[in-house]
Image (cartoon, rainbow, N blue to C red; front, side, top):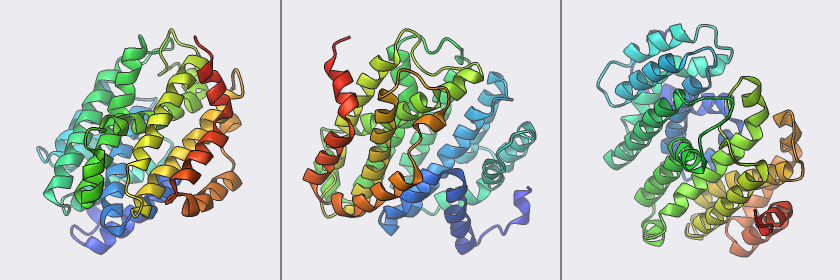
Length: 329
């Protein structure tokens, strides 16, 4: 698809595309992002799409590590305005000609649209987003050449990987939320590390959930020397920090709380399912049912403004994780 056929400057068409494509490239974030206040919904939605483009390059099994590094660098240069966006889009689409996900290819073709929206944001948000994309793109480039069947070297390298792909997104959300809410900016001072744990908890969930598929293509993002139980214990600690992070969001900022709490709750339920089995061969075995997702979505309407209900959910939904955590390795 040639991005040149789309109007060069039409904010309404651009925003309609951003809203529409979100549902095709992520069901989860298509649910959570619209919960945010309108002033930051567009910013967070745009940021997600930028990160999704980086992830698409990362996920392309047909590309060599060197090709992934080249494309990631081109994308970063395009985001920073150092090269034309076409200098990224054209070689990327050519390299991904056999890629099977047509929605993600469509998103890459519309990189000019996504970047036009980015450049309408306040300078503070643009700086924070550029920092996030830079760290993520450089970090993924660093790890492209470290994909092995054995996994990452150790826990420190695993933590670093989770930071560059997700912890930095927690930091970005904190910046965006702080730019929007003075109350939150005051609350989070001195507790910024909780934002990193929030992002890392979600990423650890994805790594554990997707591990059978990764293993099938000869890759593992888990630390080579650690068991699933040990990783679940670490994930549970990060979930506890994530709960603390959500509770720092002012009670009246219900949209921001629901956005975080919905993503958090789905992670808790997924990790709990993983914790009930020693192994699984397909991520569908630990997938949360559509009914469970919608039930929890409805519950967040009531619970997001109530710290007791959020804590009660976490306690009730994490019994296996707590048991694992109580066992000393």
